Image (cartoon, rainbow, N blue to C red; front, side, top):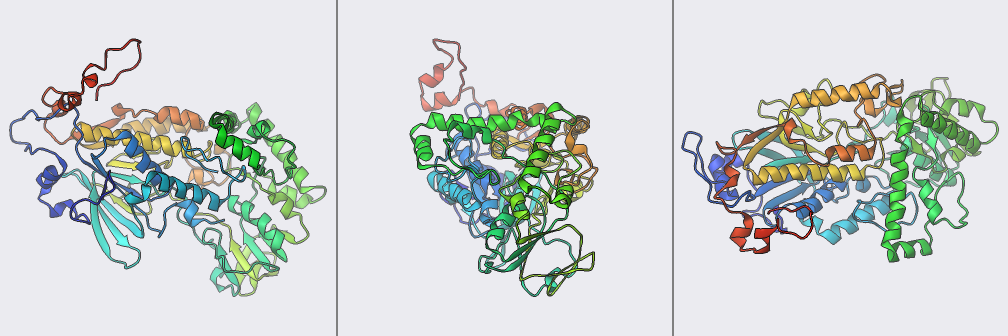
Length: 592
C-alpha cells in the first residue's frame, strides 16, 4: 500500500490482517480504539467525524485507476488514506496501453489533439502526461496481477492475493475498500473457428498487434465487422496487395457523433466525406490553448450533441426513424453505385443502436476498392494456406487478422469471494447483479467502475467513469469518518432498479433481435444498459442513496463518530472554521 503522500507504509509489503492480532492489530495501526462488543460503550475522545486511516486497493491502472487516485487526493483528507493500483501489465494505461491501433477527463482538457477522432497511441500519451502531472505512478504496483480477493467480516477488510507477473510468486495485501477498475475491454479472445492455429502464415489479434509483421503488398484476411475491423480495414487497404474481409454480421456505419461542433472551427478544410476525419490546424490548437473558454464551449458542444441524440434509442421514435434513414442513405452513398449484394448484407434489419454503432473512418469506401474482397459467406475452417468458407472455396493469404474484439467481461477477471464463501461468479450465475453499475449485494465495500447497467452505449464513457468514482469515494469517506465496518447494497433496492430497467427497455431499440454484449452476448435477455442518457446517469449517481445500503459499524453505537463534542476546527484552533455559518449572503456552508 502507498500512503497519500506516496511513501510506502512501514514494513514494506503488507501482510494479510490475519497475521496481525485480529481487529485489535488493525485498530492500533489504523486509529480504531478498542471496544469489545461485551464491554460498556465509551464516548470516543475525538472530534466529530475524525477520519480513520483508510486502505484502498484498486485492480487496474487504466483510466479508472488514474481517476481514482486523483479524486481521492481531492476528496479525502491528506494523510488519512493509502492507495495501491495493482496493474498486471508492465506499464499503466489499461485499454490504451494494450491496444496500439479522444478521450479526456472532463476537468483535464487536452488542446493538443491532432485529429477530431484521436488514435490509440495519442490517447495513451494523454494518460501518461496526466499521470506525470499528478504523480499517479507512486500509487502503482506494475506487473502485479490480482488473482483473489476474500472478504473478512470479523475484521471488515478484503484479503488480497497478488501474483508477480515476472516471477510467478504470490504475495498478500489487504484493504478496507476494494475497487474493480479493470473495465470490460481487457480480455481479448481468439474467435471459435476450427483450425485457427493451423494457419501457417502470420496470425494476429487486433488487440495484440504484432508490429514486426510486414504487411506491405501482402494478402491479408480480416475476420470481423465490428468497431475494430472498421478501424483496421481502411489502413490495411492502403498498403496490402489484397484484403479479404470476412463479414460475419451486418453493422451500422454512422456519420461522426459530435461532429456538429466542428462548424465552430472548420474553415474550408477539405475533409474527405468518407473519412469524416478532421485534422486540427495549428491555428485551432493555438486558439484552444490561448482561449480555454472557447475550448470548453467546443467540448461542451460535442457532449451536448451526443446527449441530445438519446431519443434515437427509443423504438419507433421520430428521431430513430430519421437516424435510420440518414445512416442508410449515407452508407449507400459511400459505397457508390452498384455493390447491391454488399449493401444488402451490411445494412442491418434492426434499428441503429441495437448493437453499438461504429463511426466509420473510410471503412465503406475501402470495402469497394479493387484490392478488397468482402466475403459474405460463413467460415468453415482455417487451413494452413488460409480460410475455407462454407461454399467450399479456399481463400489463400499471407496474414490472418482476427478483429473480433474482446470477451466482454461482466464478471471480474479475478476471484471475489464474500464472507459466506460465495464468489461473484457463483452469485451472478444467472446474470449480473450490480446496483447502478457500482455495488453488488453481499459484497460489502466493493465498487465496480461502470460495470453492467452503466452507460456503455448511451454516450461518452469517461464522464461516467469519473462520476462513478466520485460516488465510490463518497462512500469511502462515510466509511472512514463514521466508524463503519461494512456498507452493502440491499438486494431489494437492486430488484426494484432492475424492474425499472426491464420496463423501460421494452420501448427501446436495444430489445430488438440483435446479438449484443449489452445483453450478455444473447439476442433475447435482460438489457444491462442504463435506462437513460449519459447525463441522466450522472444525475442519478451524483449523490449516493444511503437508504439503499445496509450498514454495519465497528462500534456498538452507530453515533460513536460524534466523539467528544468538538469539531475539527476546535482541535486546530481555526477561528474561521468555528463560525462558517456566519455569512453575508445565503450560500451553502459546511463544517469540517
